Length: 639
Image (cartoon, rainbow, N blue to C red):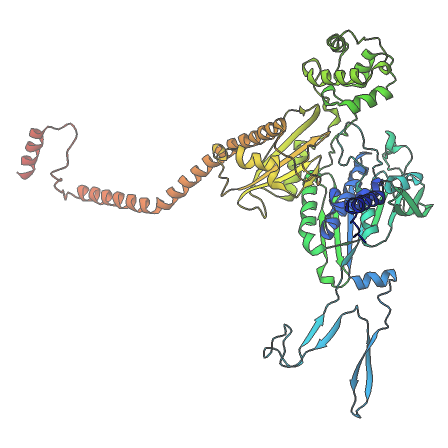
């Protein structure tokens, strides 16, 4: 019987086909995507996630206050607990086994129970007399007790309370339980843009503890649509009801899951929002970052009152409190929404604008749905587009090829259009920036400057800068503090445009500043409708955009020029003071010498008056007498 042939090709093809059959096309909701890729939103690890949670909630509170022109009053409470305390609070079972009993032999040789000990609790263990706590023999004391600390993660109850506009009762679930839904889409300066912040805090809470978010808010109807929280009599409006909501999120459907949603009477006469989340984190590694963030936030928002209280349920001594009082009552003007500049558009955006426009002609579409295009410029633009375009044609008539041609011409005809509208920006202002730095840093000298508004790729921006010398806790050399849309940037500063310009583009010696020995503080704030962050973390602005780099350089140079004039005056006054000190140093010696000379002259005068003349020194000459006359006078004196 002939041997069977191996079916290699057929078997391999069947295996590959089976693999292809196993591959299933899937789609994910936005909430599910960000839950799996949380580092994109700044939730890299437990410590960073705690920091980002605080940051997002605080910035939401600032936005709520600024949207209704109310001076922010924000309080933050952080309460740390161990895993054992968390499990006890939540009622989480710690294991199937019952608590173990410690036993010891009694005097009769039997065994008696001593204490019930939970496996998760701390236990004091007595070590032998010849063993120290590190396990080395011969170095311990007799009866040494070692405390075995409970393991596990740390958990934090984070509560942020503000006095802002609050949230409408029916809008709470969608505002906090649906990822990528928000009110900040549009062409204007905002702290956030994508509707991620508080939702990511909720997702992190769901991932790390499984605990939903708690919201308490009071709202006045109409204040978000241009209304005011202050009555004509100058009193603050109060909402009649307080909404309480316990909210979870269904990450697979990207929709809120309401656990509790009710209203009570507003007996506190309070308006604002209080949000509370319970998350896992690491306070030890990110404590300095949280403190640094609040310090820099106090600089860029001197019109806000900020407070933070941290407590530890296991050790009360670890608690700390931070307070930053309001230094200014002048708030920046609100940024208004504007239309897209022609040089910032792309094919997708123009197609969307063409579909949504209510204008019936192309020329009205160009002048009405885009900014910076006058009717004259629109006519010239249509002429350049060619014979296939007409000013009276409907925007619906443009096909894909015509849309592409329109976009190309819009992006390349910058000279036809006005500059981007700066009304969509809300910079802090030199006055507030100066006050903020003085409040936190307390420098010896400070200079501030704002560069003229600029634009890159059709996106407007403004750069404000300050340079300070000295201050409490200031270090020798250059310390750069960066802000983007009035948000402190703490990470990846070495690659930032502000750091690179300060370290390599400014000749400090020209301005009589020693960049190695002097304690120099460099503060750069950039606001824009689209901040050109690098990387997914949005932690730094690259120096590859020439317009922003040159604007930062000009602003810093303006500050340095102010400092040079001040330093020149200060150095002149210092030289006068040094000369005065040197003169004062030698005055006693000079006065003693003068006194000796005057005393000698007085004695000679007395001797002359008494007739006891003294021969003058042969070297002494009398003015106006010739040598012959002096000889006759000397002979006369001898006779």
